[in-house]
Image (cartoon, rainbow, N blue to C red; front, top):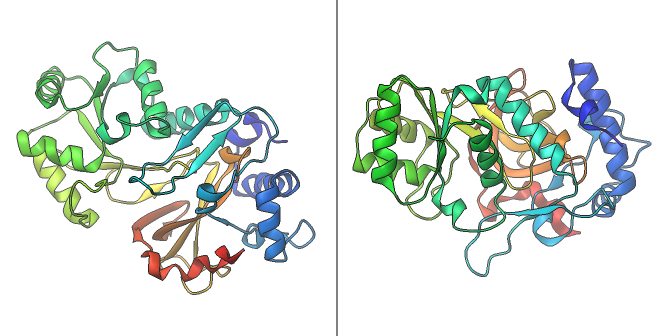
Length: 326
């Protein structure tokens, strides 16, 4: 069994590979769903020698199975959003310390000390339901900021507008974390010229608006908030780690997370840097569920542990998930 110390103190590529293969062997032994999937692909501990040999579980399994590598009691279950009648993903977490260490250490890596910021959150679609891992994380960051100005906003835009302008004019460092459609709603009501505020979008129109490409979205948000760039967070219910983009649409991973890009026609083949394919995620913080997830996102690797998200598979076009026949 890997500890938080093993996972969150990885110092080299070689160490990452060693810990990743150890995680695979642990999950093969302890996760019945994942082992059955590996067996279906004729993979086991004897023929997985490299990271590229590891099977990646299609993310849809979190909707249909209990994906667990631990027999410990479940401390919480994070769920994805979904419309009425839609199956939602369920990520059972048996040790919240892995999640808390993951997002706290990653935030410090990319942004420094949380106490240097006022953290404002505009996440209405997440606040209005239970089981959001994003709300869990942001609530903890708000508390860790130790600033009475930090907090959540639902539909009280006037209060948020007043606070953003006042804090920014006072020279206070602010991070506004918002779901995409809510950020657009805000700048339709008020145009800003912010100098000390980071705008971080978490993605998603949640059916509230028409989807638009990232470049156009960020141009609109930059203009509306008066900032030179828009930051982004890449995370999901099925992961306990996040990657961050500091303004150019290129995401960087913390040391315990890595992206591989698979061929859209052959899910077991990887493609070279710069080419578009399906995004596979290694998230070692997921040690008690599954650390190897084949997502429905399309993207490309842009450099050393950095990547770009370009869209999602159409449901009719998930040839890479022909693995779901089992």
